[in-house]
Image (cartoon, rainbow, N blue to C red; front, side):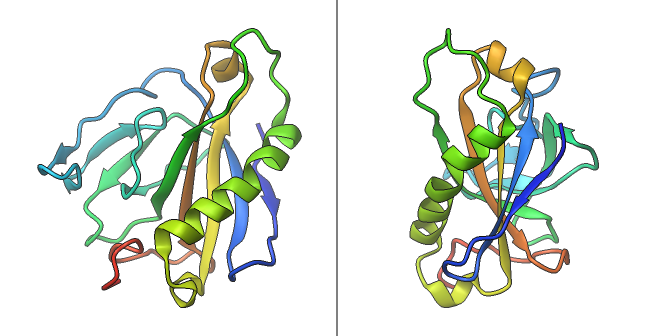
Length: 165
């Protein structure tokens, strides 16, 4: 599955839609979380169980099944701004990366702007999303994970969803 990139002109965010799979490790979470659900000790987090606010380091590769969840105060590659389920029936054939990309880009952008709040805080960020690949889709995965990263590829530090970021 190739990575797909599409530039968006709103709010300074660009978008990248990436394939995620429900294979081995996609539903694991070995992080330690506080009472509010924030990661306080690093561990593996599957793409199927990432939560809004999770900060993570992304592994190399075309298809991602899990990331390293880290506290947002540590350097990280991305932070989840929203998750949602596609409203497709379980018996529908996988629509393909292009159709999924077209279908989720606008919604991820809207949810990211809502989650981050102040448009000035989106400067220098790139919007990305994990979408199901064909195998994951066939297994019933309809989840989308929208996340942000630094547009220049440098590590993020801090919580982009927090007003103090």
